[in-house]
Image (tube, rainbow, N blue to C red):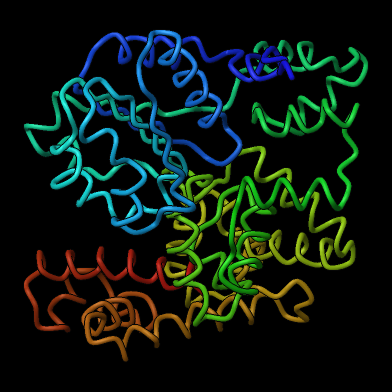
Amino acid sequence: MLINTSLRDARLVGRDAEVAVLDRVLAGAGCVVHLHGPGGIGKTALLRHLARQARLAGREVVEVDGRLNDDRHRVEEAAALACVKPDVVLLIDAAERCRHLEPWLRDTFLPRLADGAVVVLASRASPDPEWTLDPGWARLFTAVVVRPLDASASRTLLTHRGLVADQRDAVLAFAAGNPLVLCLAASAGGWEPSGDALTTLLDRLVGEVPDAAHRLALDVLAQAGVTRESLLRRVLDDEDAATAFSWLRRQPFVESIADGLVPHDAVRAVLDADLRWRDPERHEDLRVAVTRAAEPDRLAHKAFEEGVITALRTWRTPREFATSVLLRSHLVPPDSADPVSDLRGAIGAAVDALRVDPAGVKAHDALVATYIAASGTHRATARRLGVPYGTYRRHLTAAKERLVEHLLAR
């Protein structure tokens, strides 16, 4: 039976840069290429292209699936030909499943390959830094990030897949440049996420989730604009937040930016659609909970910090709190009967908490002496605390920073 490869070729739309790298590698020898990107982004399609081109050039191709070969003995057996025959092209897909073997591959197995071998790994995880830290490997190693397709390439892919024009915009908005989502939608003749389709996408884009707490963390990630550990702590139990946040930041479909963690757009869309399909009421409840929990993150950090400083400076005149920007923050419950009292209580509790923190005793004393039990000028306060003025100023600056951190983490 003849297999029409045009549909497979369509998966390479928009991949000119990646294909050019692989073609250059195929023309050379003794190279290692590491393709990495989230699930469904097109890494396997690139490996298929390279395998096809290598065979056309008369080179032997050895393909290893990391999902089936997760110990070194299986890898050695699967890739044995590359150790005895020159010019073999060794392709290792799903390399994240055998990532624990990367040091062994680099230090022991790959140096045993026959002359002229080319090695390409495709992984959801970024490469081990040792590839570039080792001077011997650095000159032979190339890392290629496989990113989502741009709008033009996405539209072209849908055209190649035969999706009618009036259905493309909805698919483009949902897929966010992920080739797997684009192809699945085109095959279905449009896009109305069904349970089966969402299950397939979650399996491919996200993979295994350890437990219910991690799944909830994923759902929070999808609902929040940016996720910080403090936000997770407000939605999850305290004991789960740090573990879940650490897990999230290691996922290949999550990016760490200055403000926190953000998922790739396609993953966000699929997680959101899946929760809405599974449990619409839970979806709405979580959306509201995340909106409330994210308040201090939406309130610009600088504005939150300035609000705290203003509250300290006006501590002895409670009526000034009636216009505080912090009344719109998570420090005040949405249904509060006395927002000013609740806000003052939250700040006072955070100041008191510094006293029981061994590293925060000086911070507590500086804040109380300066603002809570104010006694004249800063110089007078320094004399009262029995420290040089310069030392007092350093303590006070550190104290305000520590207090803001405590309040953000509530």
